[in-house]
Length: 242
Image: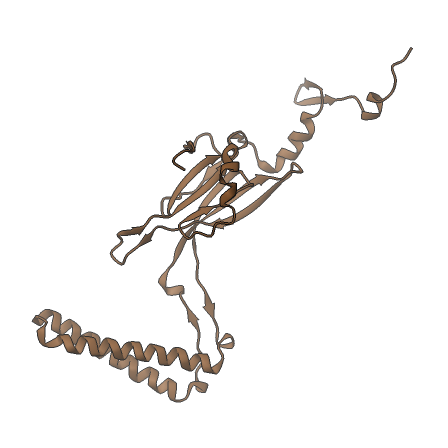
């Protein structure tokens, strides 16, 4: 990326929508440079993503998406439910022990805060120990939904070898941050762009029609419409008249 020139997205000229500020660094690269990245096609890296190698974008839409997983009760075998509860209880017990050991040396305001946390942990311990005693009486679920993991996703349109267009969707790599929001690892997304098609403003579903009409060698404006004509292929193959 240090050797390849980067494109600067132009919102006034490009067919591009949405905001990508909430994700990792994005490099927009002219599709002509794709062969340079070919050796990296199978490179498994968590910090660099070749988003659309071989599929240069002619349209881009960025949007934020809440990505989460959910396991419902039917997805959790009884043994897994018990394991999840026991693991959580062990974690709470350790937290209580750590805070209890610090109480004596903490200043008064911090001591009150730590005591409050210990009380909450103990309430949760009692609650989950009761559930662990008769897990069959409870329906459970596991999910990271409440953590609000938001990813920037890009939907892009590209041209197939046939001349038609197709759509793909990819989530982009997020910059890794610590609990305070400080960046601990930069991550990079490389988006390949068709520099000619990306500037076209008319609706993409009409491009097949435009491509068809462009093959007519004779085009004449006739008021509110255009007359198109071209010699038939069979006519081109006939010998000239004597």
